[in-house]
Image 1 (cartoon, helix red, strand yellow):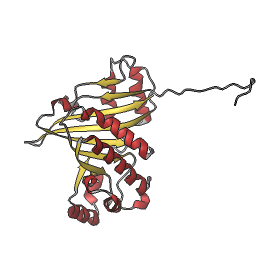
Image 2 (cartoon, rainbow, N blue to C red):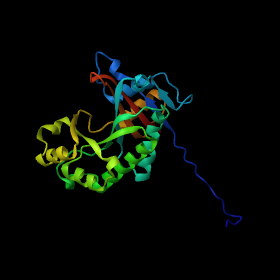
Image 3 (tube, rainbow, N blue to C red):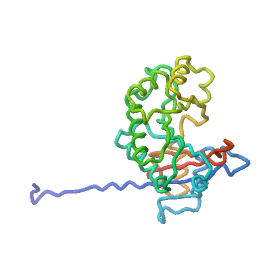
Image 4 (cartoon, one colour):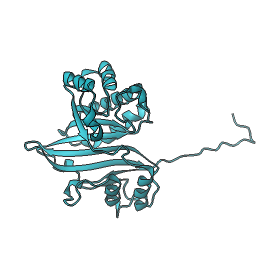
Amino acid sequence: MLTNDQTCTTHLIIIMSAIIWTGNIQQNPVQPTIPLPSVLADSVKGHDLSVSSVIKNKSVCDFAVGSEITGKLFLPSTITVEQCFDFVTEAMQPFKAKGAFKFTTLIISIEGLAFSDEVEEMDTSADTVIALYKAAAKAAAKLQVVEHFGVCEFSQDLLEALLKSIEPEFKPVIDHINAADCCVLPPGLIKLSTREGIRLVAHHDPETSLSVSDLAKVGSELGVQFKRWDWILKLTAVIKDRQVLHGSEYVVKAVY
């Protein structure tokens, strides 16, 4: 109880955010693979966050008929399991509204996790990585927008640990590994993936998706100071019958 001489002061912290859809960057014939910071900076030009917190250019999913859409969801390693579930739900919710739309595969990438054959060399513990993957898979499955799941930079030990603790419906079908490491894959990982029906697929994504300094430059285009990103979703569209890439895009949630 407060006395007459006491006052109660409440500090209200308001967290603002923006969700940016870059639109199809594959339409650029001169430079089809543009760095994410440059893509985002171009995408937000001329937009006003006071009008809408969602900046959306034409998405690859708007013309997804006859295409297979793969999603790769980048998540910070510092988040809790509860935050992970909420972030994935938020990132996937727009696709739930598309009705019958489903990602062929959703790859879960924990930021900062580098491929290593030794679990002891990981900056983030194996238990944390597995817990985040489970939360992410369950959140996406709840919305019924994903056919298959994938992991990123999982070593043999980490993959074995996941397979021992995961429900069959969340079993990954892909292990995304940086192309720089694909030439020297451990025989044990190759044997395990073959036995479990998991494809080892090379990727060329940078180790750091979006640095604080790059994010700040994007925010300056909007007159705000972005402090962090909560999640980054990379979409890739392939024409099903011909396996030809015809769309690529990013969706980013940035906080200021």
